[in-house]
Image (cartoon, rainbow, N blue to C red):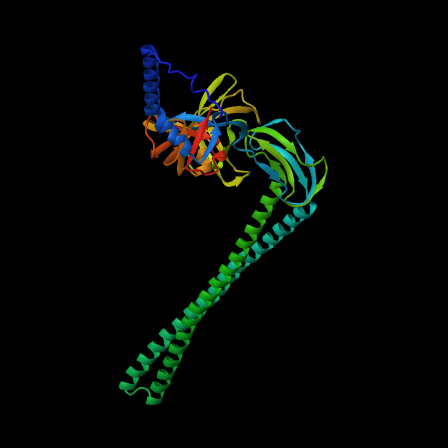
Length: 423
């Protein structure tokens, strides 16, 4: 039989340590307190669908205060009036100015030599003179013919009156038995014939007078029409002297000296430096809020001027819309064509508006939701946004003042409902 060590074992009495017991109790209480304090947060962290580092995100706090919507951009000075002059007729061109020359309104800038047009004008003027002679001759012929018709009418009238007197005399003589009845009948026939002749003479006078008037009117209209043609040709010949429509400066010469050009060819441009505007490019998202007459500020050369929106292009090019501002008042004298200036247009200004810093979350979500950050977890939250400025966006619903949201970097969330944010 093998002997065990039970004979060697002895009971050891452990003495109680009050201090150690207090430490253990304190540790237990602390653990319970920490669980009570951070338990919900830890639970939310474990319930998140994904985890993203805060270094990849940008945050902003919802605030309430003034909201100013404006557009700030760089613009360039352009001439409000910058006409380009064209050849009204083909021919050889003689230039009277050089690029950069100061010109006055009505000053001749170029002369077009067109023998064809000048000869055509001379021919039509000669035709107009001939038509005038025809018109005057028609008036003379009308007066002559009208006189002959009037003479025939007057003679018929005299003959009619004579026939009436003869009839009365024969009737009286017949009553006294001095003449036979046959003479009375002849007098009646003569009177009837005279009446017919008078009626025809009167009708011929009226009819031929109308015909003569129509002939004169026709000659007059033909002459007037020819005069209009001559006047138009005179205008064309006058336009061979290309004149400046405004006071300004010669901008560009499109042809060489003594060049032969076709009709409607570009000749020269003139810049009106007394009426300058500032052209700027506006993002398409802001262009819909622009309106003619909106106020703005134009800055440059150490000065600031007030401006008004004068034109907005209906066309979108590369995501931008061209707009123009004119100076509200006198145009500054020190500005030059194509000079760069800073432009700011005020779109809207309101107080006590709930806003948040603008970020990519507006474009990524279409303004329908934002990630609201609470206790290290970003939770997808429906919102409704309003107007936008360059740096802020208006919050209409879904958020309150003091809320903290993720404004950029939410593309890494991949649409998750809850995302844990790590340090």
